[in-house]
Image (tube, rainbow, N blue to C red; front, side, top):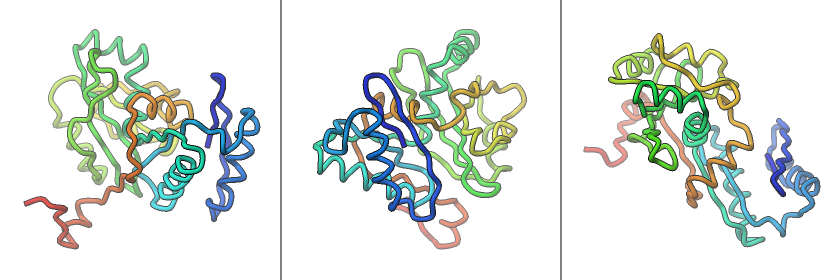
Length: 223
């Protein structure tokens, strides 16, 4: 969690079993450091997924509560959008794009055991924010390797390497990766992405693996 005021970001992290019990005390403490309080919040930035059900639900519930209580503007972003924007807005990516003419960015996030989330983006220089190329997918590691290896044209990658230090090992040989500073989810990147995409939805992004869908005969409207 983080509070931002006057260009400064104050952040804190606390791992507890009942997160909802620690949430408001932590929010009050951070806002006090920023010289503010809950009723003075004017903007809320929240991650809407993918991730653990409880964590996402609590985060979006708090955002909704501050919107109702303080009239705050609420903006949300996915982990994919946060990592894509962080990578695209670096000198390393711009130099790669200029040299190769490439615009495709693959964003990888660890899901569970040997399973991973992936979403592709178009990060062309004329775009203000990287634009998704289709919906995110949830794949086994070997299937993700095959998918990435089968993509045509230049490819750049961004991933949450803090959550899974070995995640960049899934890339085909020669695919450049985002620098360490933006290969993790940090408050400054969350705020930056939420304000850039200006997505106002409080709908959580939950993803289920293809195996789950097949075993339970779930089509989600597909024919």
